[in-house]
Length: 603
Image (cartoon, rainbow, N blue to C red; front, side, top):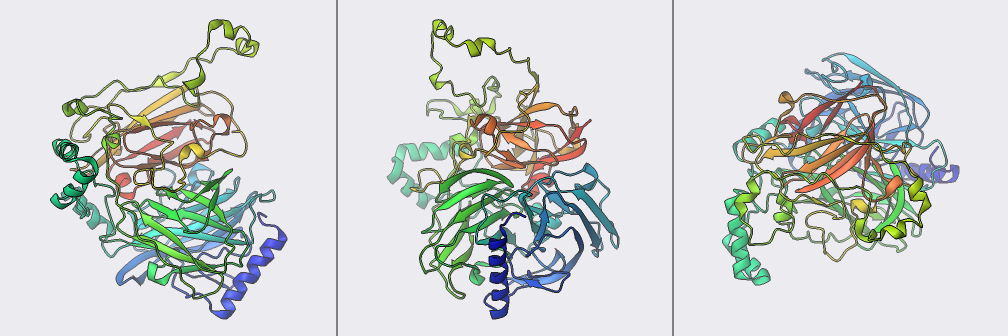
């Protein structure tokens, strides 16, 4: 059990109290357990279960005036919060009441490949009217989620939260414990959204720079630099305000299935520690999260414990999870404010000592504006000709992750005093699978000339905003990784795309054109990603952990989804310890469906 008996009882009493008083507004997202107990949105089931009977169907729903006949699990969106326990064997019978095939993927869960839930790769899917039984042992703990992996069903409601209790006492046990699941809701069908984006890449971007905004930029940077910047973007046929492919123009952003005006509420007593398990279950939206007036301590990333990081704000990419602990001491309400990266809308909720309280919603920050760094041009000075940006340049593959070169100036004589270094055997040579920068063609619009390490950046729109914002370099695992071996092979991949034609891929190839990535069983591999696009990409490897090389040495954080920032390079290590076929893709729903997808085969 992850929670002490005392804290678990506290939470059970809390949930019971809420149900009795009707403190919170029940919505269709509330889930009826097999025991007959109804849980409120965000409330974690009081005990872990090992057996589930889940039904995938459709239900007519209206949220914020937008109606949809949504695919759902057990008639709710989000689906029920599932609570497991590390060390248990889980059985889930999933019955498909849709007229089309469906599937459920257990995101971030280490399990046998046939149980992963990706049609065409790990199994055949669940045909209409049939039941598929997932069975696997639970070998991890933390906050995760699950979602459909068929026909964009995830984009319109087929998702839910997953909480796994650790087998050892939880070092972060709190008096209150809530899931905060973020998502979007639209009455526009996913295939129609894709059709519009194929017709016009910036179809949903209504916040382009204009003549009026030029005056503001001129006041800030000077007229000459402002005009020069506009001309540079014009020559590239790119838009510096192309932040998100799909925006609040058609999306309502949800917190635990509730629109901002419903204000999902979690209660606390002043002075209590409250754990909030943030899950980004959206299809296309990055969120920037803060709770004005409260410091957040980030204690877990993608289900794995990290050394606590105190922050005022953090960005959560699509498919990531972050656990934070807050300690409100005042007898007042606090807003949980999660604005979209595009600043076209937000999801929000409330932490309050009593039901019915609301906190002021802060204004949204200014929209981010992409720069030449996002185009992979580093700190290119103005004198450089932009046409060079279209020419592939040699990639900087000789970097040494996890090694700070700044203090390594020394004479050879100094090394004589370092016997330990002399005793270390030379690292084995590393094999590089690097096809080089892809050509510029209809499937690849750009090659990053000077990609930079952006793991120390919180992301576009969050730098120098006066708040402490989390970045990847701050993620430090609480214990060393289980595999200390250095990699013997490096696989270099470029994230590519054509914004105008809305085509996405790896190395300039769509999924249908690319061969699988083959790993040998127990091979230690480094994946190096070069992002040649001006968009963030949350890269998700199924079935295997990705150990981000962020300068934390053997305390590299384990993640299942890693955000590749525009114009950046990063690397992570993978131990191929799970045989089978695994999906590997960008978790932006439409990027994945339009080609940024590969198969990884562990032999």
